[in-house]
Amino acid sequence: GITHALLRFTTSIVGHIRGGLGHVNILTLMLFAGISGSALADAAGPGALIMRMMKKTGYDEYYSAGLTASTAIMGPIIPPSIIMVIYAITDSKVTVAGLFLAGVLPGVLMALALMVLNHITATRRNYLFSAPAMDWRERVRSVWQAIPALLMPLIIIGGILGGIFTATEASAVAVFYALFVGFFITKKLTLRNLPKVVVQSALVTSAALLIVSMASLFANILTVVQVPQTVAGYIMGISRDPMIVMTIVAVFVLICGMFIDTLPAVIILVPVLAPLADQVGIDPLHFAMAFVLNLTIGMVTPPVGAVLFILTAVGQLRFEKLSRAVLPMVFALMVVLAMVMYIPAISLTLPRVFGFAR
Image (cartoon, rainbow, N blue to C red; front, top):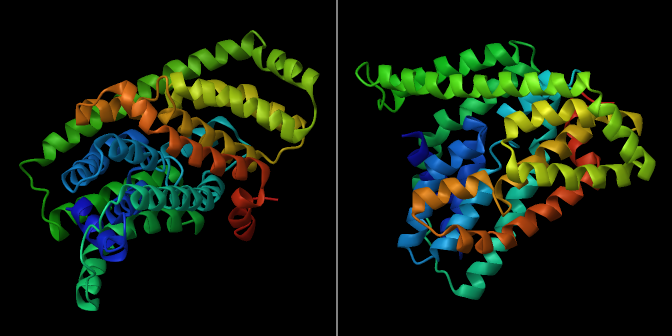
C-alpha cells in the first residue's frame, strides 16, 4: 500500500513531464530510501515494480534496470540508513545523527544528477510523458495518501535529532509505526499474515547479524596483526595531502565495494582507513560520508555490483548488457562523489547547523 501511495504522489509531481516515469522512478526510490535504508531492498521491492512499469510504457528494459539500480543505492545515503548506523558503531568519532544529516544533501544531489541524465536520455530517445497532468484536487489527494509513508523517516530522524530516543530505540518506534499503518491505515496487514512477516524479518535480521559478527572477528584479526598501521604507513609514504589521501582511499574503497557486501566492508575497512583520515586532518564526518557514498556506488559498478545481480534476476536480463547500460548512471554518480569528496560543505553543512560537526 505504501509503495503505491508513493508512486501516485510522485506521479502527480513529475509524471506529466518528458521522461516522467524515469523521474517517478528516481523520486519514489529517493522517498522509499527514507523508509528502508537498504539498496537491495529498494531494488528488489519498489524498484522492480517501477522497472516493469517503465518497460510496459516503451522504455528500453536495460535502461530501466540501469536507472533503477542507480536510484536504489540512494537507500544507504538518504537517512535513516543501516550502513550509517553500522559505521557510527565502528567509528566512535562520528554519531548516527550526524551521519544521517550528512547524507541528506549528497542524496539530493544524486537524485538531481540522475534526473538530469534521465531528461537528456528521454529527449534523445523520445520517451513520452507518463501521465496527464493532475488537477489540484487529485494532487492534494495523492499527498494525503502518501502522508503515512512520508512521516516515517521524519519521526525516526526527528526523534533521534531531538534526543527523544536513540538509534536503537528508533528501530522499535519504526516497527510500531509500520504495524499501526499496516493494520489501521492501509489495512494490508492482518493477524493472519503477521506471523509470515515476523518470520521473514527474523531471517533477514539474523543473516545480517551473522555477517556483522564474522566481519567483526575479521576486523579484530586485522587489528591484531597491525594491518591499519601498515596501510597508513604505505599511503602516508605516497602523500600527506588530505585530498590526495582521500583520492587514494576512494579508489581502494570503490574497488572493495564492487566485490564485498557493504556491511562487512564497513566493519573491516573503517578501523583501517578512518584513523588514516584523522592523521591527515580530514573531518571524520566528511570522510565517513565520502566512504559510505563510495561504497554504495560500488554496488552498481561492474564487473560485480550486488544490485545489478538482483535486477538481472528480477527482470530476467543479461548481466553483460545491464553492465553497459548502467555506465552513464555510474558516471553521473561519480560526479556527485567527486563533489562530496572535494567540497566538504556538502556533507558538513547540515551537521554543523544542528551541532553535530565542527
